[in-house]
Amino acid sequence: MSTLATTLESPTPESAATTTVVSGVQPSGELHIGNYFGAIRQHLALHSQHPAYYFIVNYHALTTLHDREALRQNTLHVAAAYLALGFDPSKAHLFLQSDVPEVTELAWIFYNLVPVSRLELGVSYKEKIDRGLTPNAGLLNYPVLQAADILIYGGSLVPVGADQRQHIEMTRDIAQRFNHTFCPEDDPLFPIPEPYILDNVAIVPGLDGKKMSKSYGNTIGLFDEGKALKKKVMSIVTDSTPLEAPKDPDEDNVFALITLFADKAKQEEIAAAYRAGGYGYGHAKKALLGMINTYFGDARERYHDLMARPDYILDILREGGENGRAQAQQFMERVREVTGLLTTY
Ligand code: AQP
Image (cartoon, rainbow, N blue to C red; front, side, top):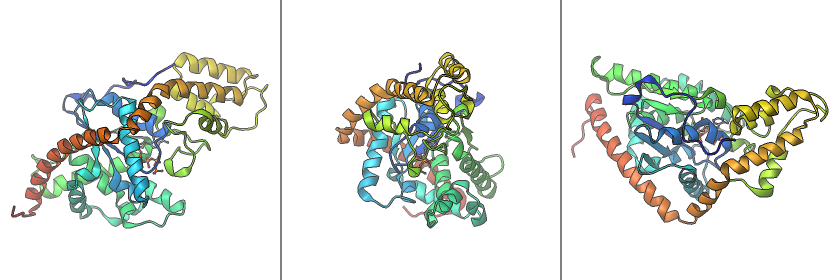
């Protein structure tokens, strides 16, 4: 069985020599195994291979979260999770989005290049409205701020889950529009970033079979443990095929989660047991529970130690933020120059 991954199954793109990796995670709730396998695992695998900027997007979290204490706690939680899972601050930059206020300035410039009608077609925006959220202007403009986040560090590779594909497409459009509008053809300011999405973990299902999401209440938290974890795993929705009957592993949520943790041989062994019959969903859930505990057990301990040292976490974020901000400030000087925004300081 796999333990915490430091390498990727898929190679990075051929342009690796000039790659700058950027990505963010919202401190909008407890991180879950969908965030991990969809994105964070790739962040960790890439951060020692390329220049990398990872930010905790607390401005973005404000689009849905208006609870000061929760936002602060979630922010520390995300940082502690990265460190516990293997982020090495000597290799890449981990920081707070709000420590680089220049991203909001760049986002403002970008707002003027994006039709409102395009934003209204955002899948993630529409999904939130469908779930009953009254959209604020921040939510509508979420992908524009995301574009600023990516482009201000010269990001060229963006490891994300498949739910973010459309947003990265929008970032690419914005970069192209900006280059076309403000830059000479032979001297574009922004590289056009590529998404980095691993197909086998593109959308991790939640307990109910829908996309696992912090705000759906269907998650397995990265640091869930003991009875609480067991209760969640046992509540994963399955069909009602009886224990003795053969089952199709490819139609089952429990098996989908097992594939995240088990190596190929183990996956095949369990899939064969499904097909043979006499192997119930209870057996599969028990196997999954063991895999989760093995995979995240050590990281959990490190996580709890780190959460008891918030000053240490803040020091790391501060240093990452200083590096990120220096890069962003340099970029913004060029942005102001090509757009004609005068400054007098
Ligand atoms: N279920 C998922 N499967 C694969 N990848 C996922 N990601 C999220 N859920 C899944 C990826 O995790 C990264 C960080 O996500 P985020 O926190 O920035 O926002 P999100 O995509 O909106 O995540 P949630 O959990 O669904 O948060 P809420 O409920 O607050 O909106 C991203 O790369 C994302 O693709």
